[in-house]
Each structure stands twice: as structure tokens, then as C-alpha cells.
Image (cartoon, rainbow, N blue to C red; front, side):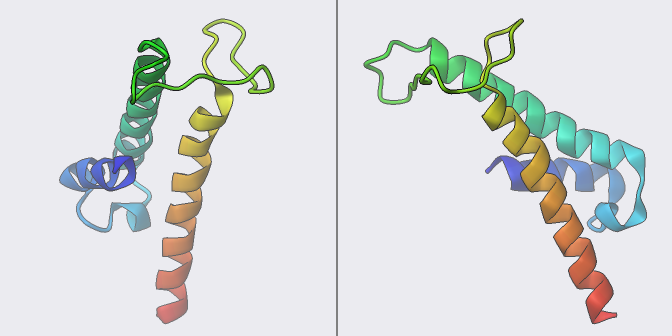
Length: 97
């Protein structure tokens, strides 16, 4: 749900094909919104009581940011998966033309 919401917010500023134009503001909106939501979800879910249905905990093997203690894999996923999605869509558009 984060990805379509981030795309929609970026499209409000840059139009439906913002990812093809290379404008910086839609990209900042896309990645910024997703990163903020991902961080908020991590903070909320790990702060809830452990017996809550919507909470989770990480094992000692999960890499964490030394300053915040936040798990790095979910944050990295937000930057890698959307970037690959944009690249694949741009590649698919180029191949069709």
C-alpha cells in the first residue's frame, strides 16, 4: 500500500508519468513519503506491547542503526524495491517504443 500511495502523491506534483521525466521533486516526494511511512510503521509496531496482534520484535541477527536502534532491512527495502520498480517500468516503456 505504501508504493501506490507514494506514486499517487508524486503524480499529483509531476503527472502520471513523473518517473520518465526525471524531475527531482516527484522523486523526492515518492521516496520521502515511503521512507517516512516505513519508519513510522517500524516505530509503532515495535513500540506496541509484544502480545499485540500488530506488533513485532527483531532477533539479535537483525542489523540495526546504532543511533536509533531501528532495523535497517525494512528501511533498505523501501529504497531498493521502489528504485527497482521505477527502473523496470522505465525499461519496459523504452522496450515498447
